Image (cartoon, rainbow over all chains, first blue to last red; front, side, top):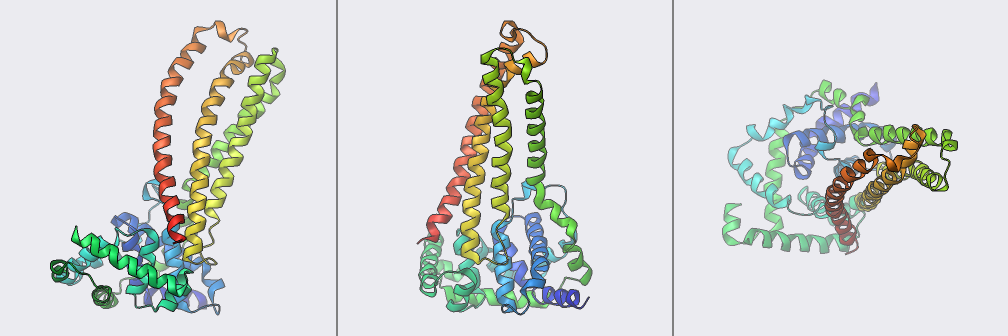
Length: 161
Length: 206
């Protein structure tokens, strides 16, 4: 019971993080809800074995990003959706209009990046250091730097279009 | 962002600031309740993931049952030609499910907890390539199986000379155009999925 309370608290504390990942990796509200539930489910599944092994944030980012990669398309999984996260995905509508508008532009650019780049840029935007990004993704620190330079160039080219 | 667009420059640091603003905004909007979280962790949710696995298992059982049916009635195939066709069909019926289930197993075996982002991407891309390859192979083998199994199946059902029956030839006439259009569709799908997976693998090595 203690672990359940602990888990619920972790999820509550990090609901924004999961929301941001799902928004980055999906293109529809339904798919985002689906991925959100899947991430929470995967976190719960691995909760027991994670403890005392790594930093909680590393664990969270790793599971969230890995789940996003293996997340199957919505079309392949009809019929079992539980709309428990409906309210959660109304966040965007209630936030500051200007911020939301700017975020939509930012997300539109980020979504054009490939899967690998999405993961790296997401961690960078989350304020992670190159070392932390390397720890979560498995790339070397210098490779993270190189990738971020490439991502920046790609984004500039994208905006110029 | 508009300002940034006008300047044609997007600095990562500026994106980071915008991202932080959003994160702070999200922090204020706590919406998850204990009940929602518990609901999300319920095991029945997992059934969604089996969307591919279950049909494949059912398909495997059908293949196996068909194969066994032909084997049990194999003695009815009294010419060498029929026996060869029957044996080829049975072989495909037994091989296809094994290949398919093995490919799905690889796809499902990505260990989300133990592997990092790079490893997961690599495993998933490889698994996807294998899965789509098996799908393509299954399609062509399946078509070949239909071709060789129709005459022996007719014999098993009691038709003495299936080649003298117009319905057998009619089946082939219907089957071939259908096969052609399906093959084109499968090939396009195959190219798109494998292209994406191959790009991920190439990109990982950069």
